[in-house]
Amino acid sequence: GLWVWTPTYDDDDDDEAEILEKLEQAIKGAFVITLSRSFAEEVETDDIDDGSSIEVENVLLPLIDILQHSNTPNTILEPYEEYILVRAKHDVKAKEELFHQYQEEDESVIPPHKFFTRYGFVPGLKEDVVDVLLEGKSNLFFG
Image 1 (cartoon, rainbow, N blue to C red):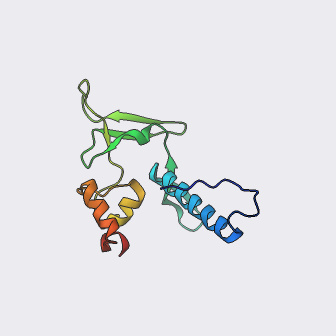
Image 2: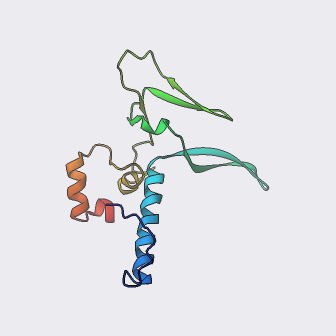
Image 3: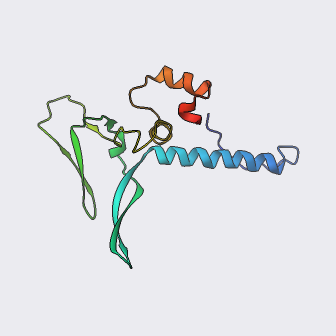
């Protein structure tokens, strides 16, 4: 689970090294939570030598992150200067769920262990399989 650091003022409590270790764990946990809610976005940057280049940066998109992942999404994101428009790729029926493609499901683009770290699942694997792989320190995640 996620450990939340709270300052203590009792000299009999954890020593400084243990407090710092727990603080490091909390910071890593907060980073993973934030990363799992972010999207990779291509951004054009000015390059002094070549004119411009494309870089990828992570951005937080509140409310958009509640869309479920699909390798065949029915939405597309259209970024503008001040907002992002979520547009349906086709007519959406009442009660039809909206899906977005978090990232292409291609191991040459993002290996399974990084997909898991970023999004909390590996496409095509069932949750109980992921738990077994983690408990067994499978090469899929620890390779």
